[in-house]
Image (tube, rainbow, N blue to C red; front, side, top):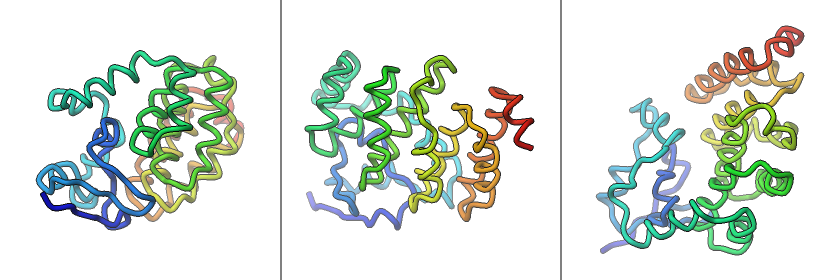
Length: 220
């Protein structure tokens, strides 16, 4: 079948469940997929469908029923992989294998994992940055005690990322980690030029207020 190329900036969010199992291969600036039928099902402009943005933000267990044997084996490996194995895969694998490995690192909360994820926030590939934020969000969701190694400053540095999906994840990540700067930054993100980033910034403010009421109150 024919190969199709889409400029990433012309679409709003790539199908992360496809990245998870190697259905989509990427360069820094393009997405390739041999099936235009699958591509049309998985990519929707968020300006036309708000729910699609949310689906890709929290893709969860979607797509497992249709995965092939290779994809199933890859997921099985990632599910059972040790911290060391995942970090090795993150450092030494092709892009389409690095992204899901990064996401799975969120199940660990060690200093080494957090340092690895923090370094990935500086990666030039926006999908890598997004996956690293996903993993940090997963760590944050597991509770305050698990966040002790997370530094907020590297996350803050991405608040003006050109990729709006990254900015939405920045807002979410900030809400899980206590910092005096967070409220002001999230309030600034309420003025983002993308409506989805504004939406996630609003949710993040509510979550931060619930998790850290004293810090929130003192920043007002």
